[in-house]
Image (spheres, rainbow, N blue to C red):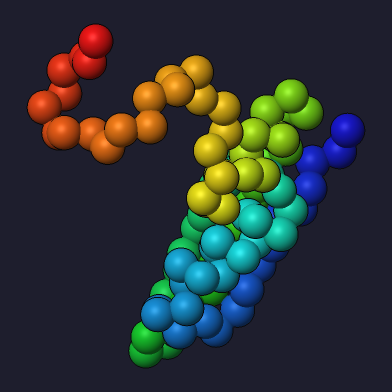
Length: 89
């Protein structure tokens, strides 16, 4: 399978860089491999983003990350955590 070319954004203000990286990774459903940020002039930057495919068996779990849904939990305890770090019996 050929490698996906890097996505290049030009003349991006500094405060928009995190949002652009997040958008590119989430839009393709892949993991981040490389980000190169180069200053052009003033507070503007060129960004090169390369992503890497996620294995099919991991993709369904990653799609739910950040949505607030629990992935799978074996712990049936619904009591709030007391913060002690110890196990309850």
